[in-house]
Length: 217
Image (cartoon, rainbow, N blue to C red):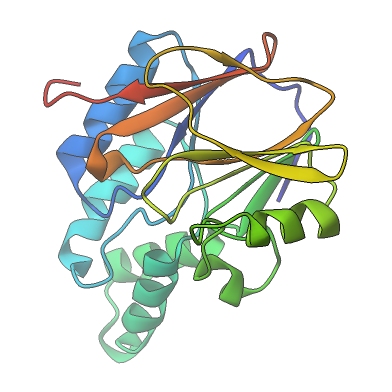
């Protein structure tokens, strides 16, 4: 999916909520309290083993106009629900249609948002960028042209920087803006909502901020 509207001043990033509704509500509330109106969920909205919880997660995303990416759990549940087509109710059909419509990635003014790897095949949503080394990040920098890639899946926050052909791995502090160099390229693996964080990308200041989540949001 390609978005053509101008980038907003701030983009809220969240990933891997796995149908934990209170955690997802807390992330939405924390981002909106900091003045963020454009929100993107980087996949694994659902828990593939709990289809009964999907409806509430979908409603929460739709109510808050959140762009969403397809994660591996979302794809697995989509296929599971399709096996029950013979007993499909209107609600179940709508849930399947929602999951089917989730894009594998969103491209927006040189920035890419995906669940894991930024490629147009379903294998890409299962393979993490962060394998404890820089190798996969380096491959992504070499084979794509995105200025920044935002992804989830690993449940652990890390920033990869590409500068003059060299890939460096960095950890950025919690709740403190980290300025990015517009001349470099980046991959930011967002931490997970269920483990207590989301993030804000400021497109004017070109900065990232990890946002801690508390039980009250």
